[in-house]
Image (cartoon, rainbow, N blue to C red; front, side, top):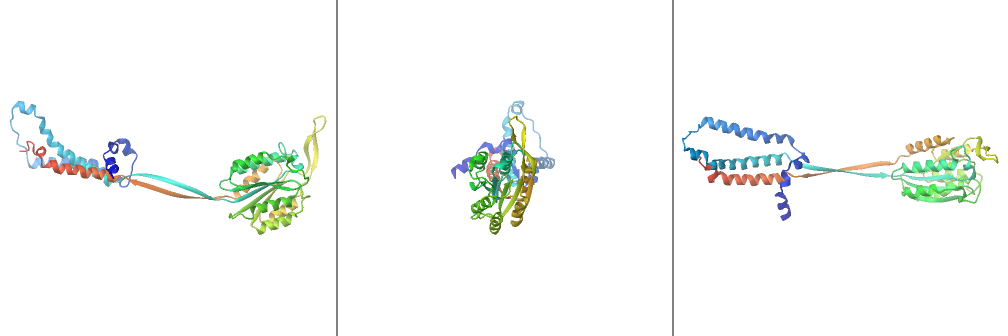
Length: 347
């Protein structure tokens, strides 16, 4: 209580810098600050017209060296200041602080990446795997509030990362993906879907999405890809499938003389299309790095995280300070108006 009273007597309340920081609830009332002294001058002038002052001839010594006459202005000064403080209080000086709280209702995304030997083909720069890794990292960096996991597969599937919000860790893990992570050869798409589904089955998010990226037909593993897709669909998981690469002859390394070698590439679109259809998602075909980036951008727009925000406006009133000073100055005026100051040489 003592601190609050002490704070009222701080001179900082009357500095111009302080008034610049205020917002005013009733700013129109601030016009009274210049109307009040104008009104008092008019009132004084009217009073002078009704009651002319009789001039007296006083000795020059008294007329020249009697400054005490101006003490009569002190009560009027207190009265004016009191009115000014009351006007400021009525105008309601305030400071507002608006807070915005954002929260997201994220979705769960499982990236399923083929790392079989065929992903080393160089119709993408520098090869299919590195282009896919780079695009996946860009995709992760653009998400907000989602949990993202990672499954890699070749002849078998391996869960590289569970669903997590630690995008930095996930990015580092993706950067370290290489062809020698698995000994088993082939492309086990069914096992990869089953592994991703197993990671997502306990999730309680509103939306569950799997992004399967592969460049070959399923020729390994002990799980049928379509059966795995049906199981995922039953758990509410949508699987977006991306076929990576071109059909026909594509570059792969160099020969003894440093000349580019060409090998034949074949994509099994049928299985990937059927997987997407069974889970009510979409199939995409990426023939180069730009197309792959565009596909991820399209998936990003289809599976948007809902961002909600609450706005809080905290307003603090400061009229009490000026009302306190207005009452205090008004009290001083009432005391002084009946004192010798107000009556000094009045008669």
